[in-house]
Image (cartoon, rainbow, N blue to C red; front, side, top):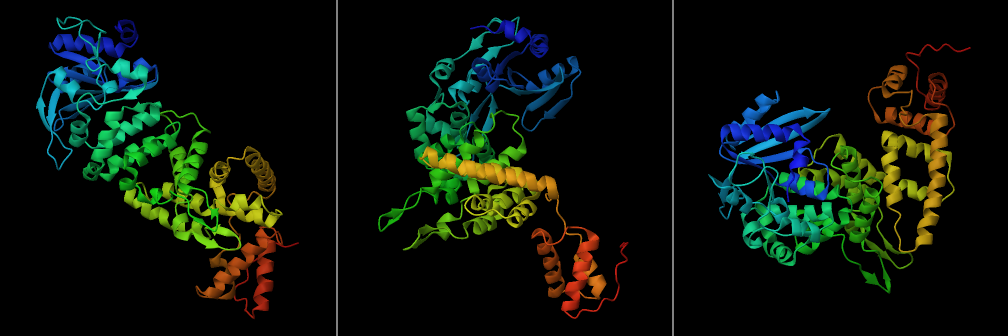
Length: 493
């Protein structure tokens, strides 16, 4: 198979061929770009392997294309970023190499090698293909596909398989076990039986991999089109229990007196899939989508800790949303996930995920809707998406009934928000104003007065305007025998 026409359509490859020939080095496009080319998937990341100095070729290409070059001499690699038609292409260069590993580290001992050595060290057959770039080479023709391990065949069969003995492959670099499952989840491929068996046998080796690298692969699984597939593979391979035991703890159904609860592991995965089905999975999915999916993954995480059996009502999980929210920072810390606004977004959705659903089961009051709008704030849309995804049942009619009720709640929220503008709600009466008015120090009474005003506004007793709320505060102060020491000047009619 030859890709001459495809490569010639992109000036980057013409420049690569010219500069490789000028330097007298053999160069090949390898890895994910070749795989995605055969799968007809878009890709702007190009990996180039050359038998010689990858850094020298990168510098020559960067100079020819007037593009910036980043050199990483300790790794023997370089990166050129080329802008074409408003799109940025990242071209990474490395010299062909062979690797050997120690049993206690996934950091290889690297030596210069041949193209064959380089292809042998690749993780999977579908990533071990290369395309010849040289035009003046006795070893091949520009655009020729080099496929020593039948990667094309595995692509057609939708199979993930290692080029060499999988036990050796995964022992050398245990992160490849996560990558195998990530590619299966992203591409909807099967893992070849011997390869999967090797993951099962070698899963304890994941312990030498840094948490950051594990979480990076986990995030890619979470962002795949049907993430439950990847999580089921992780579970059956024995990896999930090693990297995310809190999720595994959700699995199983306990039955007492003939009454059982749903399997919260599979329910969680269904909620995750429901969230994912809203959006076409692409490499450009934004960060907010990742954290919404994390909220789906963690929304019931504390159910095992709060599970109780009541003879009257059956199984209960009272307070799991609050306990789960308290667990979120610890899970993020363990996973080496960011602890700033992303974590707080997930924490808020976990804490609030029952609130909108509860409103579908009772007479809806404006007061309850106001509180939800205020508590959710700018994250209301994400919360509503999570709550819709959380409606799961094998009974189709039951799901549709709940969704219709949910439509009613959403419409009421929209109407109330348009009328009261509560998403960015802040009571006009602040603690500072209360202290100044009554000459109070920071105290419990100041907090009580602030809460009193807030609740009156949310109950609809008074509008959130300074004049009305301040007069309401003064009246409450009189009831508490508080003296006004510095009244606020109001322009009252």
